[in-house]
Image (cartoon, rainbow, N blue to C red):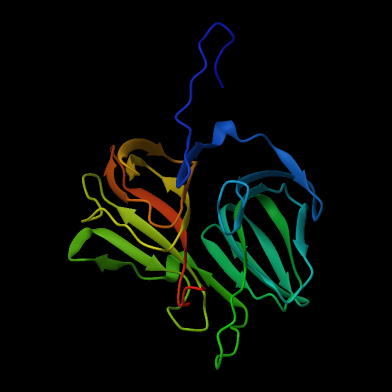
Amino acid sequence: MRARHQLLHSRARVRARYAICPLEGYPASRLPHWPDVEARVLASPALGAGFVEYLLEPRRGQGGGARADGRVETFYYVVSGAGDLSVDGRRHPLAAGGYALVPPTADHRFEATADARLVVLKKVYEPLAGSNPPGLLVGDAARVPGAVYMGDEGALLQSLVPDEPAYDLAMNIFTFEPGHSLPVVETHVMEHGLWFLQGKGLYYLGDTWLEVEQDDFIWMGPYVPQSFYATGPVAAKYLYSKNVNRDIPL
């Protein structure tokens, strides 16, 4: 927020294949199934994304959720605070770093037990012939080991969702020590929704290096050139989604 006597400017960039949006540019709104909860729509089909991603900030005692519709899967990640996720009547406590992937066949509701901040992603589940849809997945990022990425011990990748054919969604956390980076400029069919958890750095999107820091959101559409390296005094960390394990429809 800038003072009235200052010029307005922004690092936000919205292009056909990507967007980078600082949190300050997202107005707070409300969602029907999250009454009284401050909500921000980070990405949606209106942007070009094949999913919807929210930042939700329920205060203690507030919450929301959805009824099973057999179509949409939902991923929860607790950035801060804590709450109880009830799935088909069974309670799962989640603290900071806790996460869950709820299948389309389950009713679910999250209620904050402390003021919380959640990243929530909704996506149409793509069935796979010959494979049963996965059930509820609940985990804690602190218990997920970080794998050294392509030989660089300063770049660790945590895979929160098993890399199994039944899952059509990957959710990962990447951590880069200062000065470390992705080793290539990637160009691929998968799209990403990325929430920057910690630190800062430079993200290559399209043909431009752009500054990024904690509480920024990035959408990367199919085939947009992309890369990253960390700057600053602390490790950079981000949570990102990726559509996986499915053929390309024609």
